[in-house]
Length: 158
Image (cartoon, rainbow, N blue to C red):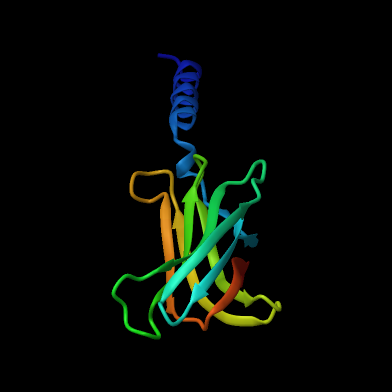
């Protein structure tokens, strides 16, 4: 073979290798700021340890790479002071990895707008387009006095 033909073959092999590489092999996209796609409104009876009405309003964003939802759920059989669980659920929607390197904040406000629960979690996590790597959850245990509440979550890179 001539040197020119060898170069062409090598170039063709390199192009084919790059063409077949999955997008997941690319560096993860770094998220700088994000907010939960929903705001959760709920009532809570502290005497019974039960949630009443629960409504979640969702804002669907076009081109969003990650489903980012905030929840508050009851913990069956839990002792007073630990009856509720605040949860952030993340799910990758695309075929390119996403990195969250920073601080998640979960906020609950009462009916007057006063913040009654605020917790943060520093994370460095990557959601990948592979089985078992698309979802992540963050959790906090809490309890609240009887009342009406709204809950949401935010992320900011550090």
